[in-house]
Image 1: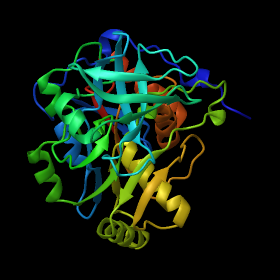
Image 2: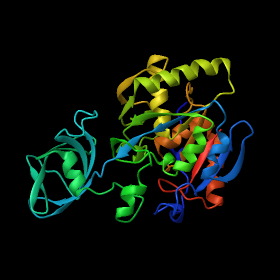
Image 3: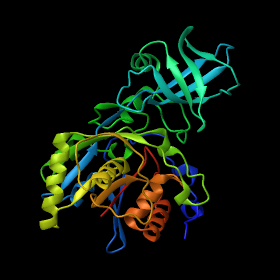
Length: 352
C-alpha cells in the first residue's frame, strides 16, 4: 500500500523559519530524540558531544558551497537570475563551461537563444530548456572564475532576503574544502573548532563529500511518496576514508556499543548509497540517486544529526525512515511548540 504525500505535510509557522544565522555557532537548540525510549530532551548544539562515546566514528561532509547565484540581464534588457546546479556531465569538473541551471525571470521560446549579460559583458548563453524545467547554459569563460568574481551565496528561497557578506562565511561549515555544492550541509553549520576538538577526544572524525544539489529543496510533487523521482547528487569517498569506515563496521559487529554518527542527511545518503550498491564502504566517485523513505534498512548509520526540514521533502522521508514516522511527527510538533528555529540557519536534532 502506497503512502500519500499528505502524511508529510505539516504546518510550519513562517516566524520559525530562521532568516539569519545565530550570533555564534554552536549556540542553537538541539532536540535529542531517543528512538528506544521515545523521549525528547532539550539541549544546546554544543551538547552534541555528550551523545558521542569513546570509540565512536563521526562522519562529516567536507563540501564547500559555490557562490552559484548570478544576477544578470538578457539581450532585451530583461533581468534574469541564474542558479547554477551542476556541471555537465555531473562530476567534479566545476571548470566545465556547460552547466545545468535554474533561471528566474526567463521564459523559453522555440528557436530562441539568449545571452546573459553582467556589467555589460556577455558571460553565458542559454542553450536549451530541459524537461525538468532547468536549462543548459554555456559560459564564455571559466565558470569558476565567473562565480567567484560575480556570484552570490545561494541562500534557499525560504530565506526571504538578499545575501550579505556575512553569509559567504556563515553558509559554509568551518571545515568546508571541496567546492561544488549549491546548498550547505546545514547539520554541520554549528560545529566549531572547540566542539570538534571535544569530539576528537572521544571519536575519530572522517570526511566524505556530497555536492548538495537544488533537489534537496525540491518538494515531492507526486500523490504518493513512492512515485517520486529523486534528484541525483555527486559523491566521493576517498580510499583512506573508506578503509576507516569499513574497518569500523567490521569492528562494530563484535563491539556493538560502538556507534557511527552521521552529521547530516547528505552524509547518511552517501554512506547508505555506497553500502547498498557494494555491501561495504569502498572508494567511490560518482553520482547517487538513492531515495530513502520508509521502510528502509540502514546498514551504516547508527545516530543522525540533522536540521528540521521542509514539508513534502525527501529529507523528511529519510528522517521518517530513520526514526519512525510517528516519532518524527511528535518530534516536529515538540519543536514547533518549543519555538525551535527551522531549516538551514535553524536548530538541530540528534536522533540516537
